[in-house]
Length: 111
Image (cartoon, rainbow, N blue to C red; front, top):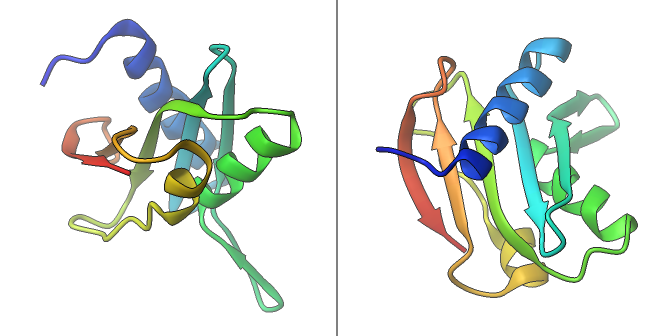
């Protein structure tokens, strides 16, 4: 699958977030103004947040009113990605690219 340069950037940013923190997952989203937000999954005894949920929360806390696209990179093949926060902020049909460790797209989901 060939991605636009902007969508490929999301996958690269998600990979970088995951690698930097050595988390199970990394994510990135792009808002309607073209700004990007990245996050890694958080797994503490008292707090667990998915990378995608955290990236969406960062976008919201920065004033984003919608999303154009998102990406999730995971070490777990075939993982189910919950898109409820993307859908709640951006509505239906926002593409979320799910990639493996090397950035290969394994699926494209629509919120």
